[in-house]
Every structure is written in C-alpha cells, then in structure tokens.
Length: 273
Image (cartoon, rainbow, N blue to C red):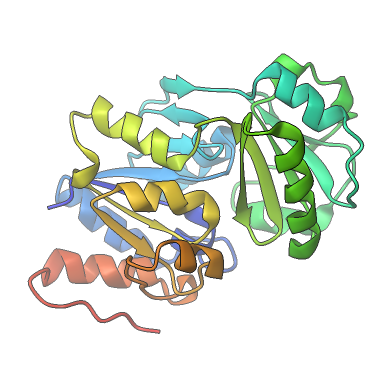
C-alpha cells in the first residue's frame, strides 16, 4: 500500500480554471484519514503554494520550483538548490534568438521585465503575481530557476539553443506546453521526492505520483505507482508508455482513481475519459 502520494498541480490536481474541485479535495482528505502522507510537487513558487495549501486546509509537504525547494508541513526548509551562478549569468544575459519572455524565480518571488497580464489567470486563487524589474539586475547567485514563456514551437527552437550552450550544466524541461524551464543540474521532482521519501523513512516503492507534463517524468518513473493524466503532454505518454493513463483533470480524474484505490483496490481500475 502506498504511504506517500505526490501530486502535480496544474493539469493534474487542479481543474482547467486552476482551482481545486470539491471531489478532489474530498479524496485528498480521505487519503489523510488513511494516514497517507501528501506532497504537492509543482513548478509554482513556495509563497504561492503555502497560500493554496492553507486554503485547502491540508497538511502537506511542498515540493516547489520543480524540485528546487522542499518544505515540511510546518514550513521548515528541508532542501534548497539554486542554479549555478555561472549558468544563471549565461542564461539571463545571453541574447537568445527567441521572442520568448524570460522569468526569474528566487526566494523573494517571481520576476520578469515585461507585463503579461494574460498569464495571471492561473494564479487567481492565490493572488500571486510577478514583479516587474530589469531581470539583468538580479545577481546571478540569487537565481533559483529561469522560465521562458512562448508558443510551444518557439520554445522547442529555444530548447535546442539552450542545450547547445549549456552542455549539460542545467536541467532543461517543459513544465507546460508554453513554459520551458532551466533548473539546477540533477534537480527535478523525482530527485526531490526521493529526498523526501528518505527523510520520511520510506522508499520510492512506497509512493504514488500523478502528473501531466515533462517536468513530472522523473517523479513518475521512480515511484512504485505512477499515473499519467489523459490530458498529459504526448511527449510524456511516449516517454513512459508502461504507465497507466487515468482520467482528465477537467473531470477530476485524480479523485476518480483515488476513490477506487481507497474503496476497491482489489478490482481492476477503469478510468472515465
């Protein structure tokens, strides 16, 4: 039986409007009643996730910034990792051949140079927002991760440039169709969940995890039970063809699976698509 459950947020636990459905919330509470430890594993900032977790009234470990930070249920830091300053300097100050906007995350918040009000709808529930600043003025040693936002094809072209320039000195992945992230090397949700499992005296075989994007890959392939959302990126389904695909986030597919697991685990699972 799984003793730790880790959930991606956007595209997985949250509805398309980036809110938590009532059925999902009820399923999470039922997990806690069964003494299953909860972990929210997301690219979102710690400051935002603390608000969301408080709104859900759930004790949960927080893996934020795509594995760059881990906090316990009391808000104490268990793990922290930032981009190497040399990498941050190169990523932020290079004139890339792209129209993508650049965003910097560190412990103080989310920073970008150009206003993009259209992307704030994903943060309505928390009220968390970017701060406008010349990002090139942020010291390189204060950069946790860098995100680029643009259309997917544009980001695919940028990913090639970044891979060629950084030569394995950073972890580059898609956290959404329109978001490409540059993270510290060997820093991802999978390594973070491995750390958290060991901290709790568990193994990864004791964990279940749910996700929908390429930043969930390492987490999903390392746990005892990994589940891919029906709405997941095709690249993720192709990369992990052996993992089961459950329902859509729009129909609260995570709650549908959890209710089955909690009540009839001896029966074969059939997702609702």
